[in-house]
Image (cartoon, rainbow, N blue to C red):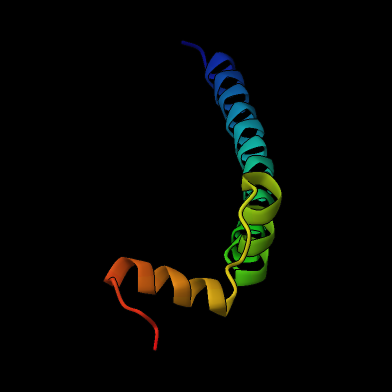
Length: 82
């Protein structure tokens, strides 16, 4: 291999590495932004109010009143409530 060919080959290899490094940096930035968005979404969806809203809207669940909870407990335990 001549000196010129070796020089050109190393330049081409260096340019390829630089291109791949640049693409990797762009990908890292994109993934970092996506991670931030997903983390924020996870935090929002773990809040009690959000969980309740999702349960009511998508699952048709309703919040039990204190009286309903008391009646349910009495039914399970066989108590008379008084």
